Image 1 (cartoon, rainbow, N blue to C red):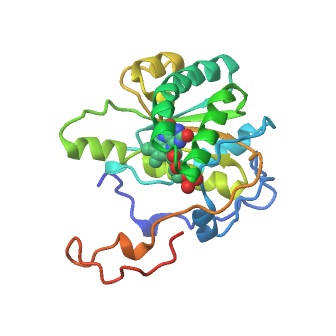
Image 2 (image 1 turned 60 degrees about the vertical axis):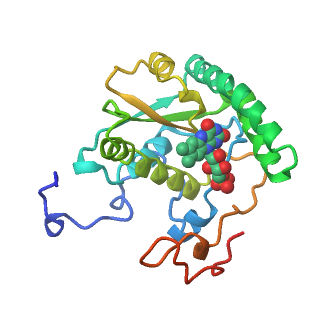
Length: 244
Ligand SMILES: Cc1cc2nc3c(=O)[nH]c(=O)nc-3n(C[C@H](O)[C@H](O)[C@H](O)COP(=O)(O)O)c2cc1C
């Protein structure tokens, strides 16, 4: 739907720009194997204040745009935030919600060391929001109605694949990134801060920068525990997959 051009009529996808053509930001390699990028990508919230080139950010967004959208509408908008005043305003929104959510979360996770570590990282990000080199806000050029579910899912589903692409590209470049939504708790405030028209909805915030400190592997549920065969709950692969 939407895109009438057949696959055969397209030129082959070049892995690299033609010889002699240097794209801005191309000095950072993005050639990490896909499975490695996918298995090592994680929420990295502690970032240095070292600069991140516009060229690199644009390249990441360019890769984000390879994602699918419903009806190939390509109804995305990305706001790259560098202005300290705009970062600070988003940071205040983030902190406002974090004070409520984090206070409750800390109490609920008071006996869970790994959750406490996540909370410490979220706190660090909240305290240093203004110093983060670049903040990308992924938006959809549409209002997202709460109902019917097909419309809601189709619209959110048209922005999150691009966000995941962006996260993977950032990982391949060696940048730290995280998908966050706390700064968007008030859509009205986020729209005002970013100067978004009413028909553009901010959906996800991705702070970007070079990682500070060392990050271990992610912990995820084993594949066999989340996959059913034919009918929900029929789990012939239960117990399979390393998880961790
Ligand atoms: C929809 C969504 C919203 C999120 N919002 C926030 C947020 O507001 N703040 C934050 O620090 N992390 C946020 N996260 C990041 C998750 O906490 C993180 O992906 C999860 O803990 C896994 O982290 P890991 O990949 O490092 O294991 C969000 C993730 C998703 C998918």
